[in-house]
Image (cartoon, rainbow, N blue to C red; front, side):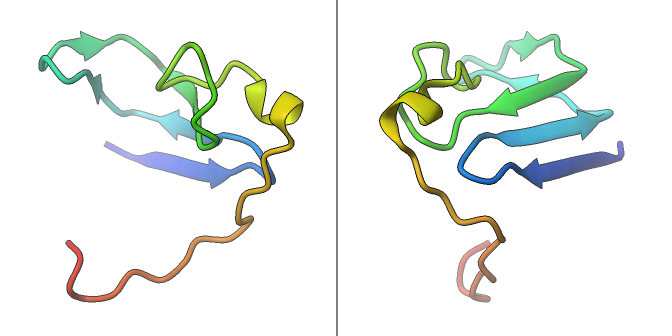
Amino acid sequence: MSITIKIAENGPLIVQGEFKLVDANGQEVPVKKAALCRCGGSTTKPFCDGTHSKIGFQGASAAVQQSDSIK
């Protein structure tokens, strides 16, 4: 599988490529492209519904390096 995850400035994570999205019950959610919520305000979690723009969400526009202790 090859995927690309793009961080949208003050918006969602845009996931593209060949991937699986599996819910908490282990059921696959059929998607080919997804905008995943980062602000926590979406009513359609884990998907973005545009709430970030209404609540003034300000997210990091670049990924932060993970420490080796988190895997």
